[in-house]
Length: 195
Image 1 (tube, rainbow, N blue to C red):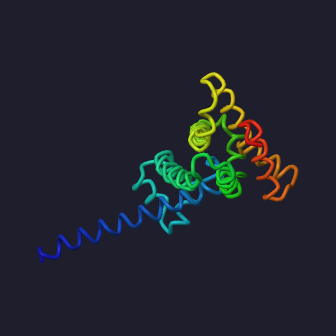
Image 2 (image 1 turned 180 degrees about the horizontal axis):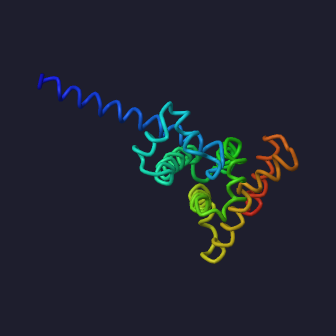
Image 3 (image 1 turned 30 degrees about the vertical axis):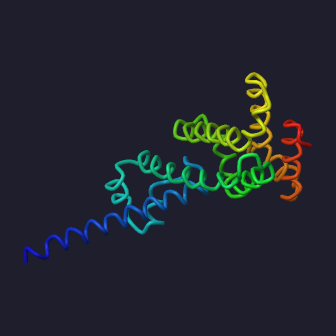
C-alpha cells in the first residue's frame, strides 16, 4: 500500500501541471485575440475545460494569471520578431507586418484602453519592446549617426514601423500587404540614406 503512494503523488503532480499548462495556454490564446479587460475568468476556464475555482486555485487571481500569460505572449512575440538579421530592412519590415497582421487589431484596441490600469503595463511594455527591436535590427545603419542624430532617427524609425502606420496603410487606406510593406521600407530607407 505504501509503495503506491509516491506513484499516486507523482501522478497527481503531473495532472496538476497539465491542468496548469492548459489554463495558461487558454489565457494566452484569449490575450492574443481580445482586450485584456474583456476577458473573464469564465472564458479562460471554459476554454481550458476547468472551473473558475480551479483557475483561482492554480494562479491565485486574474491579475496573476494574466501576468504569466503576458510573459508567454511576449516571449513568443520576441521570437517572431527576432527572425530578421540586423541591418536587413526588408526582413525587419516583414517581421513587423507578420506581427501586426496577427496582433495589430488587438494592439490598437489595447492602445485605446491604455488608461485602464490593467492594460497600461501591456502598452508600456509593447512600446519599450518595439523601440528596442528597432534599435537592434537597424543598429548597423544607426551607427552612421552621431548620438544626438541617432536618437532623433530612432524616433523616426519607431514611428515608421509602428502599429499605427500599419493600421493607416492596411486598414484605413486598404493597401495590399506587399504595397504597404514597400511603403514602410521606402520611408525607412529614405531616413537611413539607403533609398
